[in-house]
Every structure is written in C-alpha cells, then in structure tokens.
Image 1 (tube, rainbow, N blue to C red):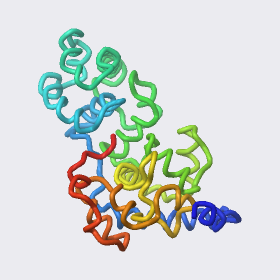
Image 2 (image 1 turned 120 degrees about the vertical axis):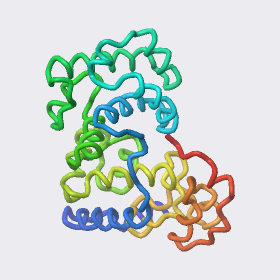
Image 3 (image 1 turned 60 degrees about the vertical axis):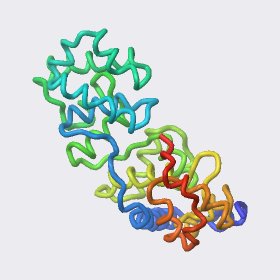
Length: 265
C-alpha cells in the first residue's frame, strides 16, 4: 500500500506539488477546526516565556506552571532582576529548569537594555534575543503579533516530509520550502493544524492511515495500518471520534481511552 501511494506521486511536478499542498492545507483546516496555540498567555512577553519553557515539556505542564510565573514576574525588568534560586524552583517541573532560568533572566536583561523592556515584533530582532530561536520567534510572531510564521517543530518536520512537500530535515530549509507552497496568510494556522494532526492522527511510530482525512493526497499512506479498526484505535485526543467520522469510519471503533488519553507533546 505504501509503495502504491508513493508511486502515485512519483512524477509530480513542482506545480502539482503546490496544488496538492494547498489541497492538503484545506483538508487540514476542515479536519482540525479547533487548532490553536495551546500555550496560555495574555501578552507577547508571556508567550515568549511560555514557549521557552515548552522545550522538552508538554504544553499542559507549562500551563500549570506559568500562572505562578506570570503572577510573580510581570515585566522584563522582573525577569532581569529575578532571584535565580527562586525562579529555578518554580520552573523545576518543566525540566531543564536551570537552563530555562538562565534564558529567562538573560532575556529580561536584553529586553531592558535593547528594547525598553518590550518584546519586539520582528523576526531578526527576536532571534537575536537569548533563549529565542527561529521556531520560538515564529510562534511569537504568529500568535502574539498576528504576523504569519511557520513553526517547524518535530511534528511539522515529520508530517511535511511524509506529505512529500519536502525531503529535508533542516528546520530553516523546511520553513522556506513550505513557505513557497502555502500562501503567507495561512502560515500560522497551518502550523497549528499540522501539529494537531501529528499529535492526534499522524503519529511518529504508527500513524492512523486508515482513519486519516488526508489519505487521498498523502504519498505516505500505508506507513501505518490502513484497515479501519486498527487505525481507529490509534486516534487520540478529545475529538478522536469526530476524526473517525470525518475519515468515513465508524466512531464506535475508537476506544474511550483514546478520547481521554493526553495527546503526544
């Protein structure tokens, strides 16, 4: 099945790839209408902090920790002047808490020194700040400043390769190549939808191919089980049964545990 799917797109032209990519993006929008940034925040600085904390940590755990962080540290100056030991203790549940504490303190200092304590809304200025790489900068731009950005995390990298949009592992090259395929206005939401799809359907080890709405446009169809029952058991998240319906299979095949099981980080 996988070989057959791959052969279908073997002679695809660049124009054909772009058309298929945009059709896939439309299907993702229909499949995941609830896609959004899952980090809780109210200001650009809060989103920057939450995104830094999300490294090697689930969004759920970050959202449990950030209310304490945001209540105690309101401004960039507060992070710059933070007591390291106290901040480390607060961040401990997120893992790598010493490095994250260092990043937040240095971020606060840099914002105070270079930007009057305000987080800038430009990519080149963001990536020059401590703790903020290109992926984090695109999260901030897209969700706090409404500036379209492509967020290449592990899910995004895996899926755009499976989709045959790219054959690349370097995140920056992936970002630029996907940008050529998808209209700029859709970049931010595309990132959320692909991440949702990676967590709920197109898993790293065994994707739910037989319960996927993208089956007809995916050259990797067949990487996971294509039969309805085993594929349905792989669906995850609060909308698992709705995803089954969208894929045209019996939602009763989705076990209750799949709906309650937390999605992969």
